[in-house]
Image (cartoon, helix red, strand yellow):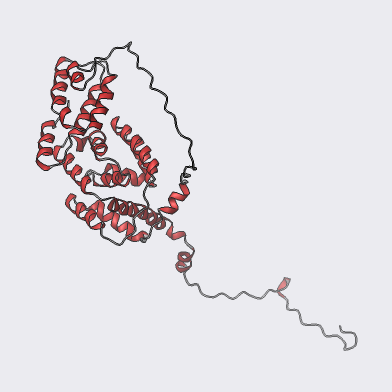
Length: 322
């Protein structure tokens, strides 16, 4: 069901990045996708999950309990280890007691508008400099990208404003769902909208084979590490099937600072502005004025009466004025 499982577990033990919670959630999600499983698939699921259930945090265990509690084909052995009873189609869940909520004493803060978010994310670096940083990052190798991100932490460049917590939480949920079904189009649309990036730049971030730009985008949203690992496993098969790639990006994500990610986000936004200016540069007024070619001065011929005859001024008498 999950190629490279043993290799990921070995790297997790040796290098210290614990990805067992992510593996357990991924295994559970893959298992509940199908309504019917063969005996071999069920036995494999029992063996793999048994090696993980006792070594994950309570939040992961609760999430797996929630998925398997309503799944009709959950193996009884796994349910017993989770403290659950076998699922019955006619079972009824008792309603929880109503929770009383005290009236709010103050007005909740008004969410920022889209225009305010754009103003808050104004760039302090010049668009041309931002474009150079972005191009250098995309052209760099994996090790060079790690150095770039590490050095951005101490640079005097101004980072982009943080994404509001409520907006980021909603975006993370949408991105995880889109990644689970490998919906790259909606994933790209939501990522670009949340980070205020055009679709072209968002697609370049997602399609990058190294995965470092996607790590920066996820860190700018403050995405939890287990969620980022699940995004890698589901959204990018070329990375998810490689044990070394999953571990490398997971370790990079653990050490990546929010400031470095937000500075890179500022560079992506600035590069977009630089590209727009370059596209419409020939239409600017100053450029058109400098592009004018000097032309020799032309004198306008004097107007002549019909027939080409020259009329002499009339002279009249001094008294009559004719």
